[in-house]
Image (tube, rainbow, N blue to C red; front, side):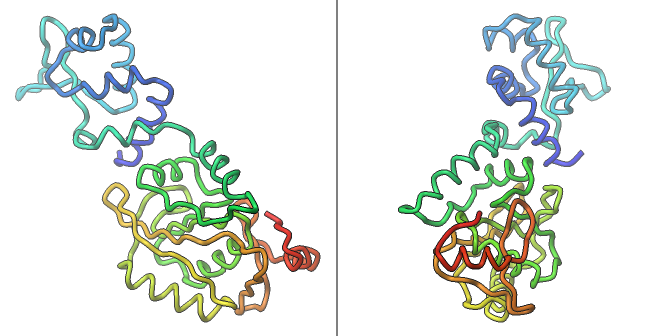
Length: 265
């Protein structure tokens, strides 16, 4: 099982269950279930129920001695975290708020006409949440080795939306974190050259790298529409907009709305 899958399972299991997360934090391969009950101030049976759930989810396992026998203290089993997540920070499991709620708040904040600004670049934990929730109006995943012009076309579409958005290069469509196949400097040069050659007028975008579970993911930040500029994708001389998770060519009536400074999405 991969690390990302275990973290996803943990986030699901600990969502809305702070006592279970506290118990998980204390499991170190030293205390028995009875010791854990005393430390948390919970009934032993309640602790055993949570232990079973964490075991079923593959997060912990009974500790074994050199001969393969299960270790016990005072007749109670000693548990330890599985090796893959033994040294993972507990912070990966703490932020269990659904990204959908965060996104709604972000969109509400950034759709105010008098306070239009760039969205904040997501942190490592936020990117993990985004991977779990999937692509949306403001989040797009791109796997390594995707054609660079496909990325610039997505950028051209994001540029006509009221919130802008982010493209994560190094994350597959299903949210699996693969990592970039290029250094940040090399990718930045390629994407900036492609923008100059395929989008008119060329916009200013931010490109930076985020380390997520040991993988370098490149984050492209596209600013919100400025309510006046129309960006043409010059490869086919059309104008595009992102709606949901798809890119659409703008219709004549939509172009007219944008010309009048009216947002569509």
